[in-house]
Amino acid sequence: MSARTEQSGQRVLIAGAGMAGVQTAVQLRERGWPGAVTLLGAEPHRPYDRPPLSKAVLTGGAGSGTTPGSTPGSTLENSFGAAFDVAFDVDFDVLGVELLLGRTATGVRPADHELDTDAGPLPYDHLVLATGAEPVPLPGGGAGVHLLRTLDDAERLRPVLAARQPLVVVGAGWIGAEFATAAREAGCPVTVVEAAGHPLAGVLSPEVAGRLRRWYEEAGAVLLTGRTVTGVRPGGTQPYEVELSDGSALPARAVVAGIGARPATGWLAGSGVALDAFGAVLADDRLRSSVPGVYAVGDCASFPSARYGRRLLVHHWDNALVGPRTVASLLTAGEAGTPPYDPVPYFWSEQFGRFVQYAGHHGEGDEPLWRGDPDGPAWSVCWLRGGVLRALLAVGRPRDIAQGRRLIERAAVLDPVRAADPAVPLKSAVR
Ligand code: FAD
Image 1: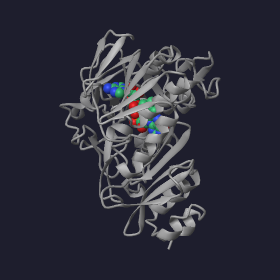
Image 2: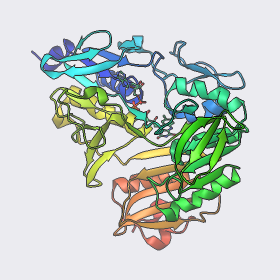
Image 3: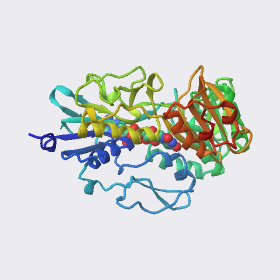
Image 4: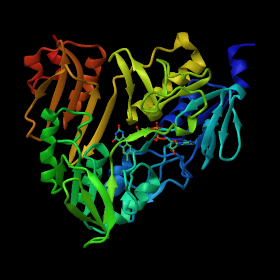
C-alpha cells in the first residue's frame, strides 16, 4: 500500500480550535493530506483570531463587516454598534474539515488511540494538541476582576469601557498595556499596577523598558510600579476597592488582570504526555510530544531552539501560525522532508499609539545597541552577542524588523557604528 493510500484511511484529530489548531487543519489540506481531519474546540464560537480582542474590538477602530466564508457566531459589536468579525477566513466545509465546537478534551488514552471529551471518546491516528494558554488568575480576585483571553471576555469588557469609570489594570505586560490603551481611548481613568519596577519586566531590561513609562504618562494612565494588588473588595466610591501592598486602596468600576498566561494542559494529567516545568507540552524539534502519534503546536508547547541554545515557550501569534507547518509537513512528507522547527520568534503589539515589534530572543550577556532617540516617535534596540544580531525591538520602525528578522536568521554580524545610525538601513550595517 502506498503512503498516500494508507493516509487516506487515517484521521488527524486536532484538540483546540484557535490559531494553531486551525492552521494545522489548513496546512494539512494545503499539503495534500488525504485522510479525515477533525478540529475540536471548547468554545462555542466559530474559530476566531485573538489579537483584535485587546485592540480594535475594544475601541471601535477596525473595519466592520463579515469575513467571506464565515458564518455568524464570532462577531462582536463595538461600542459604536459596528459588528467586527474576528472569525478566521476559512471555509471548513470546502476544506473538508469536521468542526466540533463547544466540545472539551478531557484526557488522552494513547494505548487506545482515543481522546476523551465531555461528549464521549473520539478515535485518532494522529493527535495534535493545540489547546493554547489560559490567563493566570489574580490571587484572591473575585467579583469585579476580569481576564482578557476570549471573545466572551471581550464581550464582558465592552460595557465596562463604555461606562467611562475608573479602572485598575493589574500588570504592565502586553495585555495590560493594550487594555490600558483601549480604556484611555474610551475615556476611562486608568491606573496600572505593576509588581516589577518597570513595564514589560519579563521581556525587557530596566534600561530599555524604563523608556516605556513615559507612554503611560502621555496617555493619561497612572503607572504604579513596585506594588502588587493584595485584594479586591466591594465598596467605596466605586463598586470595588483595590487594596495594594503599600496599604493604599484604589476605587474601581472593574479590575482587569493581565499577569501572564500558562499553557492550557491541565487536562493532559495522567496521559503520559510529558510537560515541562511551565506546564507546556515538551515537544521535540519537529513538535512531536513524548507520546508517539501525538504532536503539539502554538501556546501550549515548548520546543528546543538550536538557534538560542535553550527551550522556548512562545505565546505569540506568529508561532501559532508557523509551527503547524512543521506538523503538517511531518505527517505528509515524513521526517526526512521536514526541517527542524527553529523559528526566529516574532510578535507585535499596539500600545499608546505606537506599533511595537520584537523579533528574536535575548538574555543576559547580550549587549543592547540603540538606533535612534528613544524619546522620539520611532527607534529600535538591537541586542548583539559577539557582534551577532540576536534580537531586535522596533517602535514605529517596521522596516528594521523586516530586515532584522532575516539578519537574525542568518546570524549576521553587525558593524555597531553603522547599526547605531537610524539613517543606515539595518541590512547595510552588516559587516
Ligand atoms: P489559543 O488561541 O489560546 O487557542 C486555543 C483554543 O483551544 C481556545 O479556543 C481554547 O478554548 C481551546 N481549548 C483549550 N482547552 C481545550 C480543551 N481541553 N478542549 C478543547 N479545546 C480547548 N500575539 C501577538 O503576536 N501579537 C498580538 O498583538 C497579540 N495580541 C493578543 C491579544 C489577546 C487579547 C490575546 C489573548 C492574545 C494575543 N496574542 C498576540 C497572542 C496570540 O493570540 C496567541 O499566541 C495565539 O492565539 C495562540 O494560538 P493557539 O491556537 O496556540 O492558542
